[in-house]
Each structure stands twice: as structure tokens, then as C-alpha cells.
Image (cartoon, rainbow, N blue to C red):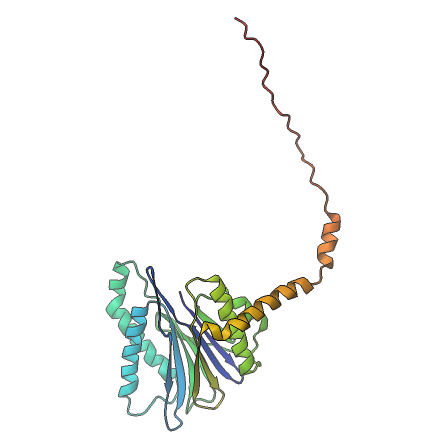
Length: 263
């Protein structure tokens, strides 16, 4: 399983991806996020994937070859996503039937975020295994591919499009930590990608477990403290009404007498 989170806020973009790869009984570490940073102010974007690693590697290899063969870099993000979709569909044509014969699903989901020179603003896209895509908008300014159930409540309760990039990174790391605690196949190291509005460049960092251990402990203890501080009148009102439940049917215990058998 994978945890890849893309966030778009007014100030920019955040990409967060774990690095754990599960193959049968083996656990390995490999990046699930790739950055593309062009020179001469053309812009920058990142790509995150969730799904079969073999499919991911093949799609990204084809895509990087297409990017490298262009006389000039793409100038709009939607053109980048369309190029990725072409390579995704090509790999699907080549490999889908073989994977399905082995009981495997062609399940690659891709998040693409960035800004190129002719884009009016930064954008975050979700590309489906079929090759179609959507833009992540202000209404729900994030998307998780992979294991999304554990981190989603943190994001839904706190994140807004008007939040700062720093706040979005904090919330994103807490969503990752919540997932890591509950999902055994999501873990450190975790890769972070930041794009600041109008900068046309990316900032990357990899966090090891030790670097965020204090934050994880602080978050856990603060949650426990907040539960203790939660108003309890509503509980006390119910507790005052509690009465012992009386059985509606009384059962008589059966006893077996040891009388003398008549013969």
C-alpha cells in the first residue's frame, strides 16, 4: 500500500509520499515521487504514483523519454498530464492482459502538481488508470492516492484552501503520521515536495523517522490531553439516568433429583 498526498492551497502546493514498498514478505524502500525542474524559468512539477511498482517504473521511463525528446519543454500543466496519460495508456495496452492473467490489477493512480511558464497559477491533477484526469479544486484542496482512510479525517477537519503553505505541510505530515500508526505497510522515510506560488521551482526534503519523532509524540500526547479537556456534561447527564437493566424474563434453574429408580 502507499500514502501519497497532494495539497493545493493559495500559497502553493505540497506533495508528501512514503517510501515503503511491499513485495510479498519483503519490505524495501524506494521513492514514489519524482520532480521535474526546468531551467530558464520554464517551471517545475512533481509526479506521485500509487499502484504496481512495475507499472509505475515503465510509465515513468516512457514519460521521461518523451519529456527529453521535446525541442522545448511543455508550457502548460495540462500538456504534461496528457503526455503522462498517453504513456499510461500505452503501458496498459502492453501489459494489462498479462497482469490480469496473474491476478494483478492495472491500478496506477498519479498525482501531478506544479506550474509551467504559461500557466496562470499552480495546479494539482489526479490521473486515473484509464488515462482520464481531473483538477483538484479549492472545494476539497487535497487528494490521497493509496491508503487514504486514516489521514483523511485530519485533513477534512483542518485544511482550507486559504491556509498557508506552512500550515498545509503541518497538516499533511500529521495525516501521514496517522496513516503510519494504523497501516503497517506505510512508513518512513517520507519525501516532501513544496512549491511556492509563482516561484517556478521546487523544494525537496526527505524526513527520516528520527526527525519527526518528537512531532509524532507531541501530537499523540496533545490528542490525549484534549480528550481529557473535552466538556463532559453530556456524559454526566447520561450517567445520571443509568439504571440497572432488569431482565424481562426470569429463568428458573433446573435441578436434577437423585431419586430411586422404580423397577
